[in-house]
Image (cartoon, rainbow, N blue to C red):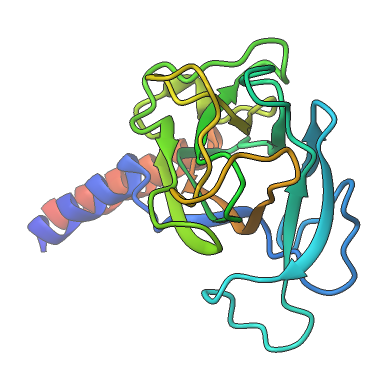
Length: 230
């Protein structure tokens, strides 16, 4: 019995819980291509730097069979110009959550730029950074008109936890080796009309118990331990 109570103490005071979806976008149904509405939770999605968007067929990972859409972005910068200035942005409060994970499906057309940079903000967008994020600079290597899934585990970044001003963006950038955009399809040339599509954008995290809850749990377990000694 004592061992069970000790285990309960560890669980209660450690705040162990399963990850929960905080906010998500599936882009299904009638899609506002300028600022798509969430499908779960609260947040905002927007276009950055003159990018425009359309609605098209969604990811094969989406179980929806009716009105299954993706957010298809286009009107990217001219070759050799504006690296890191155009893309998409998502703002999501992580208040009362920690160990944040961001996941999304992404589709590149043949002539879209294959290189992207994932950046976060913890101050509402005043500053952006990719520091400490594994795989922040990435390239789509599966060819044109193909989907891939990206996952970013931000659990090592304390500033992301319990932060009402958290956000992230995915920006089109130069190939770091050539200083130019590179088409997703190796047999194509980059074009500003290439499309980068998004679907199943999801932000999840572990709930953070409020201090009052933690105190109550601690007192309750302590009382149980005392009763177990009698």
